[in-house]
Image (tube, rainbow, N blue to C red; front, side):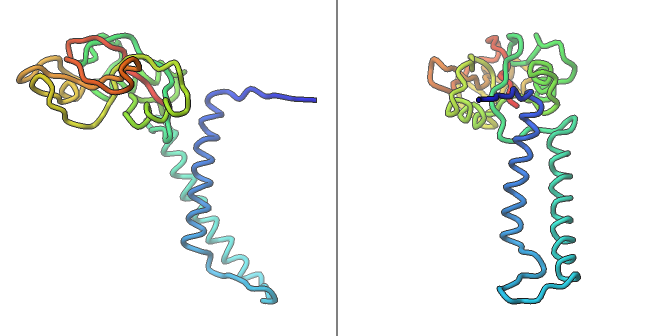
Length: 198
């Protein structure tokens, strides 16, 4: 008999963060150690065991705080992959109806695009590379944040922080093109959707 379960996307994200937290916890225990270590034949006492448990509890509390910070409103998902795309817009994001400007406006649009997930955001290059390596086949052509400066037809300031289509020269931004095999650069007057990751 075979039983399968469908896990909701939000639960899956929490499990991903939990797995990352578990890895960090194991690494921290291995690196920092507990106050007391034992060899075969060593006597155990309530005090030494309690000291070890207190040490572990303090570390787990720190990791739980970090997990909440990463996944709460305004948080930012780790190990994110592509989750969708916004409406098509020039590089100043003027066609997006969300409030805010620049990366904050892109994040708000991505939260809406990716099932109201508070940790969704404009993809960065590494997340798109990860998505491609994991076989996410639905990635389209769209704007992404590279965090880098390129010289293309004058200037590239990521469309002046995703707020403008003009600057001194021809302002450009980075876009992902599966047809070209990855990243490329376009003038900010071009319209693409914002690629979202979570």
